Structures are given as structure tokens and as C-alpha cells.
Amino acid sequence: MLVKRIPFAALLSMAGYATYKMPPNQYPYAFIACAVALVSGSLGVLRGPQHPRNLVTQVLTSLMDFAPLPLMNIQIYLEAKPIYAFAHAFSLIPLGIDILVKLFGDECDDKAASALKFANNVINMASLTAISIIDDNYLYFFLMLTYLMAQASLFYGHCENCVWTERIHLLFFTLFFFVSSKAVTDQNIFVK
Image (cartoon, rainbow, N blue to C red; front, side, top):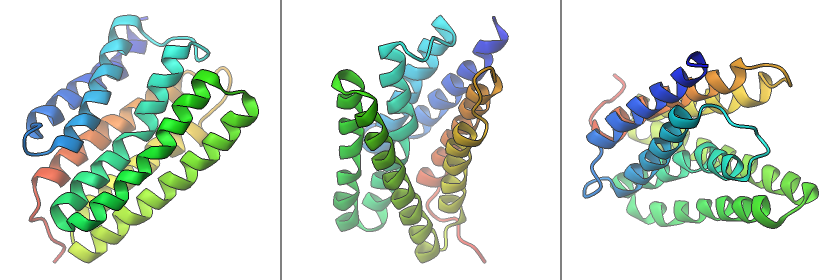
């Protein structure tokens, strides 16, 4: 049982480190993303993996799977090109739709919300790749790759009896928060 909580402890510790590196007065949106990971990691350490049909688990998983990348994009674009940060704020609307579907929707609504979240994730990853190329900053591209690996670990490693899927997913999110703490705070890393 203790082994199942190790990925949550890794996520909790890395989210704590990222929260320390990105204080709320300098990096408010990145701090919110880290706070979501802190809550998810702390609940995972305290309770362990829960049944996936639990409503709290569904909402928290939706927040953890979807909120960090748009919030990091808003923070990155806020420092690079502030006018585009406002446009990225609209990418949080599918998160609200998904939470409402989890609370009040049925299976058909859940499929539509999942498709909307997938399209929004692809747009956010493409946007992060574009700013990586424009600013010649390879950490933004690594940030996109770690998020892509975390999402791909859910889709391609999913099986009914597979316990490693959630663990690998959480470890990739741990890596995502490490890279995000470097990418957001160390702005002057250029490709030469």
C-alpha cells in the first residue's frame, strides 16, 4: 500500500519545490497550477489511490490533468507577449465545462467534454511549441514534451488491471512541474 503512494509523494514534493520557486506575487498563474498539484499530491499521500468513480477523485483528476498546461501557458505568455496571455485565459473554459459535466452530465456529455479537452490540450501544446521557437527557449519545448508524455501515459498505457498507468502519469507530472519551475523562472535559456 505504501508503494502506491510514492508517486503522490514525488508529486507533492516537486509541487512544493515549484511553489517555492514560483511565489504568487511574481508568478500567480504558475502558483495556481502548483497549488492544484499540491492538493492532488497531498490527498494522494493521505488517502492513496481512490476508486476512479468517486466524484471528488474525478473532479481532482480533471483539474490535475487539464489545468497545469493552460495556467503555465498564461504565465509564460504574460511575461513574453502579454496580449496573447489574455487569449490563453479562454483555454480554461473547457475545464469548467468538464467539471460541470462530471457533476451533472451523463456519458454522452463526458465524451464531448473529453474531446473538447483533447482539442484544447493540442492547441495549448502547439502554442507552447510556437513560443519555444519564437523565443529560442528549449525549456518551453521540454515543458510541452513532459505534458505530452503525461497525457500519452494515460491513453496508451491504460488497461483495466494496470496499476502502473496512474503511477507513470503522476511521475511525468512530477517531471512537468520540475521543468515548469525552470522554464518560468529561468527566462534566459536560449538555443545556440
